[in-house]
Image 1 (spheres, helix red, strand yellow):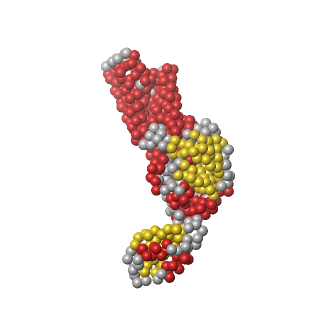
Image 2 (tube, one colour; image 1 turned 30 degrees about the vertical axis):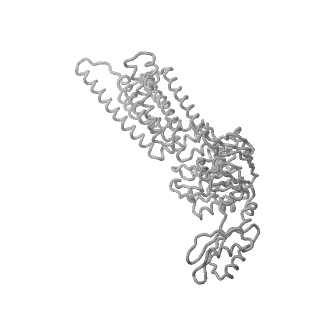
Image 3 (cartoon, helix red, strand yellow; image 1 turned 60 degrees about the horizontal axis):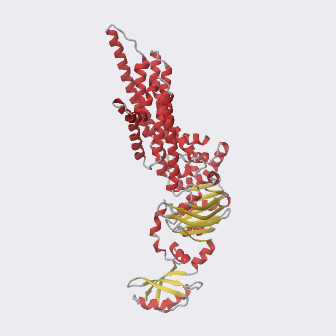
Length: 327
Length: 255
C-alpha cells in the first residue's frame, strides 16, 4: 500500500529525512516512532504530497507522490499535528466543506458526514462552533475530516498529543477500530502507544531509519534485559549501602547495580539483569536473608531512549541537535 | 470550477459569520453616504447659484455628480481592500488549515481563484450599497445609466486588480497585520504614482503614471470603455494571481 524508497528531504541547512526505505502492507497499523525532530512529520508530509521529496520515491496507494499527486491526495486522509480546523465553522459545516474539497457531493456527502459524525462520536456537538470545542473533541473532528472520503490510507501525525488519559484511550480505540478498512500510519514519541495500537513499528532517529519490525519482536528485544527499581532499608534503621550493593551484585543474573539516592533510612538501587534470567525472586530472597526490609521492587518501564540505545548501540543523549527539523 | 465555487463559498461564509464583512459594509456605506450627501448638496447649491445669477447653465448629473462620486468610491475602496484580503492566506498559514487545502485533491489555482473571487464578491456587495444612493438620482432626475454602468465595471476591475495584489501579499506572511499593512502601502503607492504626471512629462514619469491604478480609472469614471485601461487591470490581475500561485508553490519547497 505504501512503498518508500531512499526517501530524502533536505532543507537549506540540514537534512530532515535521510535515505529512508520502508513499506506498509494493506490494512496494517504502523507506528512511526522517534523522538521530537526525528523527521516523522517531514516524512508524513512527503507521503501526503504536502512536501516534495529531495530524492527517492514514495508510492502511496499505487501512485507516486511526485508524478500523480492528485491521485494520491484522493486516496489519503491526513491529520496534521494540530487539527486543521476552521474555528468559525460548526463541526457539521466543516466536515461538509472538507467532504466537498475531497470530491464528495450530494447524497453521498450527507451520508459520509453522518457516518463520520457517528463514527468519531461527535454527533452531539455537530452544531457547535469548532472554536468552542475542547481539545479532545477537536482532535476527533480532525480524525473525522481525515476519514470523510473513505481513504485507503490514513496518515495521523501524533493523534494523541495533548489529550488527557481518558481521551487518549478513546482516540486509540477509535484508531484501532478504523484499522481493517484503512491502512494507517501514525506517528508518536510515546512507546506504550505503539505497543497498544500498532502491529508494525518504524523507528527513526535524526532522519535515519533505525529499525522496522513487528511490535512483538521489538518488545522481546526491548525486554530481553530487565531493569528493576529496588528500595531496601535496614532492620534497625541503618544500612550500609556499599555492602548492600556488593551483596546484590553477587546474585546470579544481575549484570549491573547502580546506587540511586541514599538516605539514612534506606537505599535505592537500579538493578539490571541479563537477558532471559528471572531475578526478581532471587533479589527478594537475598534482601530478606541479609536481614533487610524490602520496601519496593518493581520493573522500570523501558523508555524510548533505552530502546534506541539497545537498537542502535549509540548513546541517545545527543538528541538536542535534532529537534529543529520538525515544523 | 466546482472546487473554485466551494472555496469561494467557504470564504464568503467566513467573511459573513465574523464581523469583518459587516464592519466593512457599514463603514463603506457611511463614508459613501457622506460623500453622496455632500456632493449632492454642492450640486444643488451650484444649480441655485446659477439660477440666481439669471443665467442658468446646463447642468449634467453624470458629469458633475456621478463622475466625481465614482472616483470617490475608488479611493475609499483603496483603504478597505487591504482589510478584505489580509486574512485570505495569512490566516490559513497561521492556523495550519493551509495543510488541509494543500493535501486535498484540488489544485492551488482553484484555491487561489476561489479566494480571490470571494474577495471580489465582498467588494461587489459594497458597490451594491452605493446603488441605493444612485437609485434616488434616477427617481428624481434623469441621469444616463450607461456611463454609470461603465463606471461600475471600472470599479470592479480596479478592485479586482488591487484585491489580486492583496491576495498575493497575504501568501507571504502568517501575520494578518503584516499582510494588511503591506497591501495598504502598495495600494497607496499605486495610487500616488500618478501625481508625477502633474509636473513631468519625461518617459520615466509617463511609465510611473501608467503604473498608477488611478490613471486607468479616469476613462471609466467618464463612462468611456477604453480597452487599454481594461487591459491594464486584467494584466495586473493575471500577474498577481500568477505570483500568488508561485508563492503558494514555494511555500511547500521551503516550509
